[in-house]
Image (cartoon, rainbow, N blue to C red; front, side, top):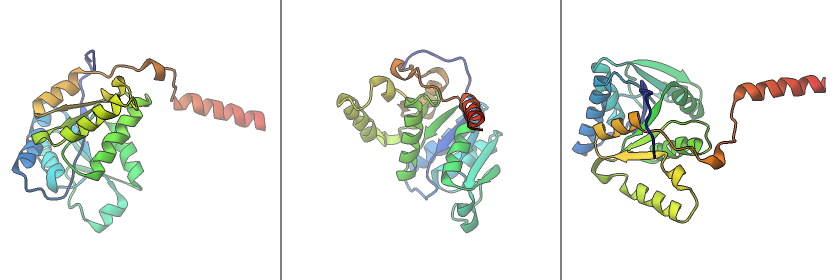
Length: 217
């Protein structure tokens, strides 16, 4: 990771579980994350719920005066297994719609300690960044070394040359909330020259599609 950015992140998506956690350090870190985000006038986009670690973040940031948007698939909203969404709720059709909506509303991402769902989110966002679909960072809040083994695995993957060092730098980590947010605000990804020619512009694709249709007609 190199360089710095003057673009202040105003909206951050936080990934985290809604299942109850007993580890006091995790709960305290989640609450503290919400408080610090609110103090820095950063708004939250998340997957809904008032439970677990993600509930702690959303409640703390909402009470701190920042805006909160919960994006909830209709299927989950109907069975009410995630409890009340804090702030504004936007219901979408599928899990893919949820991810795309959160992605389009934010400047960066933070992952709290969690299980398979958050691991999927981490690699989803990271793989899109590797392909230059976006240039948004994802930060791991590494409470009590929770993500140490994951970071070691990524080092191993790089050593085996399955990813480049530039791709690995898409994911950053810090043990404290303040350190993580500072890094998200100041660092920008280094562009991989081998990927720089990829163009994901939807406008150009739509224009080409219209041209192709005209030629066919």
